[in-house]
Image (spheres, rainbow, N blue to C red):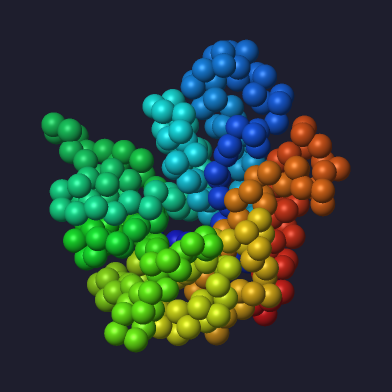
Length: 306
């Protein structure tokens, strides 16, 4: 799967991913009015609104970006209708030729972890038939439970040609409470990075592995160290834009080949029309504002990595 992602990044010259993390507050009133008119002010109405919102953005940007990253919590908050909207979003993005990174941050042990892996990037058997339930291409994985929690996902990478991004150093301010703790003289995130390399050895495809990692844009110096520790792991970089990351901060997340990282922006893209810089597009032009924000982000990051 990493080969497919790299192919799309090269084809579109865009090492970015759009985070489809919709809150109802981001959705223009005309979309909500239509959804609520059909389904009422219900969970079904909310789910319909966020799917139509996503659809508009995807239609506007699919030709210039390689991937999207829907965060499942933003859908689960609306219950079963929200989960249905998540699945509809995944399927629609596939129809548009996009790589889908399911931001699910799962991680458990034994049969539970296997169930998560099978449900999101694997297959389940029902009687004589086999299904890929959510069918994302890549998912994010929490490594806190160790190899027991990660191995089922790696197995799915092998069997189903999928990928994972393991949380190593996240972009949030309190990440250091655990991740920066020194163990045997090294921060915990470096120990996790070492395991990412080990887990990825069995799913190497040329220069890169199907086992990648998550390292926040808000910690560029740590990203520089982690890039050297994990030369064959693709880095998913959250924290660009709304959380403060800039293209100039990210140069060391990339390898000398210009690859090795894909940078995420969520609010900065999907709610761009609410930003003063793109306010001229208005609510009706929210998707066009998202496209312009993507173009500006691509230019910023490409300028830095070159």
